[in-house]
Length: 263
Image 1: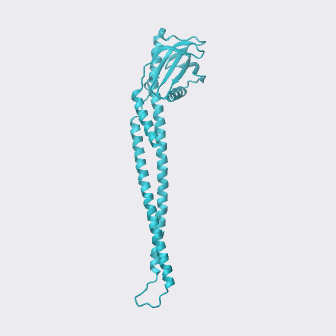
Image 2: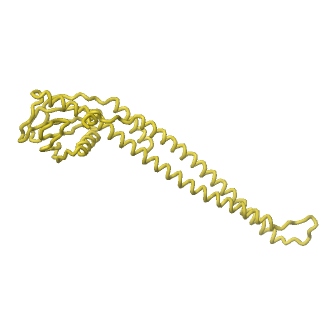
Image 3: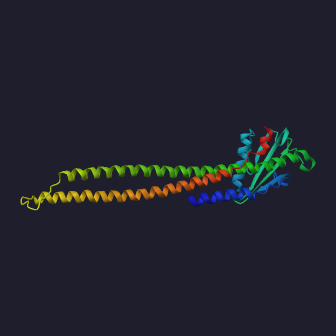
């Protein structure tokens, strides 16, 4: 799991630098299987991330639509980032885990599609919007990576807490064992050199008890050492994970400039 998260973080950072944001105008497949001229852009991110990030942004901005077989239809919307009029927008996402393409066509209603080459103002705004999606995708991927690392951090911290509780229990047992040994030694039979009246059975029982307390002490000390070693390893993992999170925070994408300029 750790290797997977480290790999995902590395991929996240690499993809941020590799993203290609070059909008184009070309014919794209519309919902009625007609080739319609529209707008397109390709990003070097997994297609699922692209789709999720874009749809989440539109939903946050109050743009509601419905998903058809291979596209999203947003009808009768007012979306000033693209146009200050009411219009229909159709968005399609295609690609793989390595890269994804966004195809988009606009209509004034009743399939009265906008021809990008004949509307330079709208085309410029669409281009700006498509380019601005890069930061939305980056932020989505960043949040996914951050949440994954934070969840693993919580898991490691929980494991550390569990081990520390186990250590406390062992330390209490060691203390109890020490007290029992002190109490035993305080009342243990002492045999002198000239003592002829020795109760051998009692001496044997005391020796057995003494050995039992000593064995218990060694067993508890070994168990404590094992727990301390585990705690050291988990703390090391926790520090490493904390450093990964700190490094990832330094890579946090900036605020979307297009959205910021519209506020």
